Image 1 (cartoon, rainbow, N blue to C red):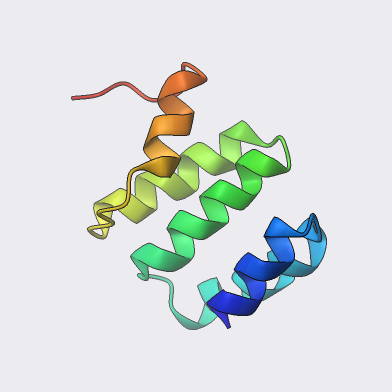
Image 2 (tube, one colour; image 1 turned 90 degrees about the horizontal axis):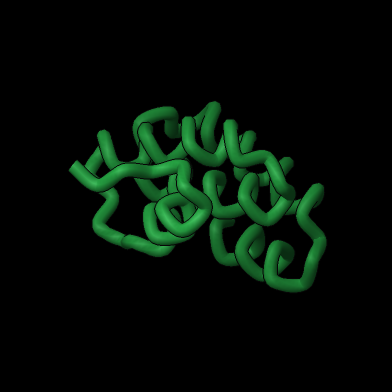
Length: 81
């Protein structure tokens, strides 16, 4: 499921990927991976507010990957603690 959504996102099929991630979020609301990749997708779609919200959830649930945080930091939307 995530593989398909990531593949769609990398091929600029963002709306299709979003549907998959939103369904995954309903099924696994505490999944760090779901929130992380949903955050990246929102950044790709230009919605930094939703991206930041998803990042907060992803890192709260233990996401170790840093690309989302790095992109938000570069955009001035994330401050390292």
